Each structure stands twice: as structure tokens, then as C-alpha cells.
Image 1: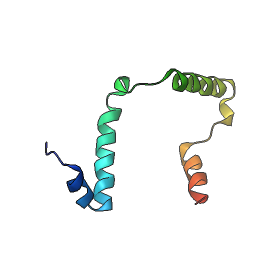
Image 2: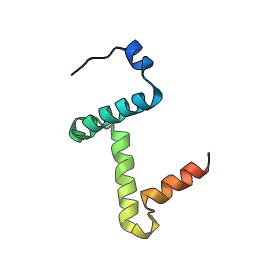
Image 3: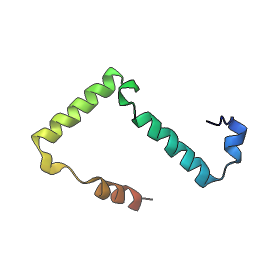
Amino acid sequence: METLNKSQVMKLSIPERIQLVEDIWDTITEAPDEVPLSEQKKAELEKRLEAHQRNPAEAAPAETVLKRIRSRR
């Protein structure tokens, strides 16, 4: 694996940097148990899960939510 320093990363094109970030993110999501969650974040996730379980019809597909967010730009 090649090691890049910050100046080398900054010389990459924007699409190359985006790909680098995606590649890094993929390695993080492979080990979700290693990502620390604060008690506050855990509580918020529990609250949201409980709300969804009480009323699953309130949920919207990710595509719908993303479309709504992108239309606000």
C-alpha cells in the first residue's frame, strides 16, 4: 500500500480525492464495532429506532430523502 502525505493528497484532482475518501470510508464500514459511539449518540439511535418501530409508515426511502435534501440547494 502506498502512503500519501497531505501535500500529495492535495495535488490529486477533486474526483481522485473523492475516490480516496470513499475508499477510506469503505475500510471503516468493514469494522463497525471499532467505531466508537458516545452515550449521547447511542441514546439518539435508540430513540430513533423506537420511533420507527412505533410507526414504520413514517419512514421514507433513502432515495426520497436524498432527493428532498438535494432540491434545497
